[in-house]
Length: 257
Image 1: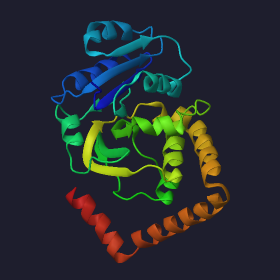
Image 2 (image 1 turned 180 degrees about the vertical axis):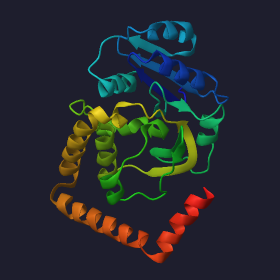
Image 3 (image 1 turned 90 degrees about the vertical axis):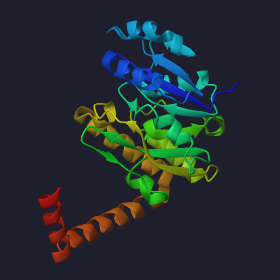
């Protein structure tokens, strides 16, 4: 019988993060899922964690790969669930009821279903309605997004020529195709590990270059227009912050936080 969800965890030399992720998944009260582990041939003790928990995995492999997105593509090939969730090592489900609450929410419908997330000092929420401008400014959280498997069947897998921005490129490609419905479940599905590559300062220049490449590719002749719109929005926000109301709001936030 096909599971509702395939949870795909990729890992490379992050034994502590892998253990945290595995523990959070196997503790779920909701059980209609399979667990897929794609390890890149770790040498740090990750394999021992996999061996200790392999009874919980429908599929696992430990072998060298070409990076994050080649590993995620391996996970897609192995997955049998109706929906796929990429919960990579270090990221955890937000409590033992997180997955069950998410898939049972009334907003859980459509092809690409995204939620919110928490991190060590706060959290992030996403809008119910998405626009091209949203994807020009930002992206969605893969660790809190369930993709219907047919999305990959129709659109192909992640672009492995991109080392950091492939997930953003995939979201944009799906959104601009107008072939899939997006739905927001206003729940923090995951606890996000901020120590990953996308938040590593040493990769900032590479990330910026890939983001620019992706935006120019998908927004084409409208790229400069969206850049101008972004600048105008930033100027408007700055102007609002410097009004008496904006200053008072900041003072109140500092006093009563």
